[in-house]
Amino acid sequence: MSRFRVALAGAAVLTVALVGTARSAEPLPPLVLDDPTPAPLLGWGPVGPFQQALVRLDPQTLARSGRGYVVTGDHSFGWSFSPDRSRLVLGCQSRSLLIVDTRKLRRLGVVDTGVHQLVQATQWIGSRQVVATVAECCGWGATTVVAVDTVKRKVIARHRLSGSLQAAAHVPQGLVLLLGPKVGVGPSRLAVVGPRATVRTVAVDRIRSGHDRGTEQSPIVAYAFPALVADPDGRSAYLFGSGPEAAEIDLATLAVTYHPLSQPVSLLGRLDRWLEPPAEAKGAPDGANRGAIWLGNGIVGVFGTDDHATIDAAGRPQVTETPSGLQLVNTRDWSVRTLDSGAGAAAVAQDALLTTGMVWRSATQTLTGTGLTIFGADGAVRAHLFGSRVLTFEPVGARALVPFAPPDTGYDVVDVRSGRVVATVRDREPPWVLGTRPFPY
Image (cartoon, rainbow, N blue to C red):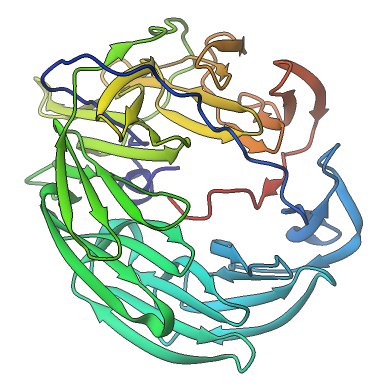
């Protein structure tokens, strides 16, 4: 669920529309699709009287493995593992962090951050220190960063930032945060959070972020949620909005460089199809929401959705949400190539890149989708499954969990290497796996 759906119960997921002056692009290097099954593999599932508890999962069947479990309660946001994966920290909706021993699967303790807001992102620095970002939900208000000693279970530093949290990315020695205005859409700042919650910031004025608050007098709510991604070594961060340029930030010097993006070149074109049961729209967001994933060899995949809001003849707000497509941005020459113009969401699995998309029109109450498409490292379509269904998916190593369409309960297990459904589980919700996407939005 996107942050705007949380805020307005409306419609917005992740997006990008990249335009500019066309120029020739160098040959696309192969994508690096390396996302092995995490070890230990943990997730939430029903245990006895508890609707959800943290359990071990079998990497082959994704069923519960062993008898151990931890009741985590509200601690299910902004999680991260220690460098050796022996410990796990989980944030909650109201200020505290839960520390878990992943080998024995037991609680080690709770640390109060002292800030009564949602823990949105965490990162381990070394074997015992965790930095956490605590902020109001959905991109409003101020942001606080906290450093915690997980052994002594106490806060060792706390700093309040003036901007609202729009996105977060992990780097080896901390977090990179995208900050927007407390309310409204305006120029962005990038904050680099290091040991003991030290903070360095830089203005990125040409990338706008944030969103307004809706009122009865102003039912159309403008927003801008750019994509933030960092390279795995933590040398550079990149911001992609809906405009014709991207920002590259050197994380050592905080030097900002803006790059014009070339006209997207279509590699494979859109997969057009489908129609699903109607859904109800509430609110009228208007803007662009972007997401990004690092695909190796200097390639960033940028994806998401665009919302366009209007007022109809009866004075009612209406919204149309469309996917922006998945574009591959080469940060070596800043060329852009469209891989799947119907994609609104994308994720890396083991040796595969997965996409799906949908279109929502509140005026006609129609929701249409594109099923699941699997790409290989060469950018070629390996398989397309589930026709024109509107769906979500969760990658787990070389498999993807795809829940049934409502009102049915169950899920299919897809082997992303062969592109086939290898198991179907009925009358049970899929486990919520601690995979690679801990930021709550």
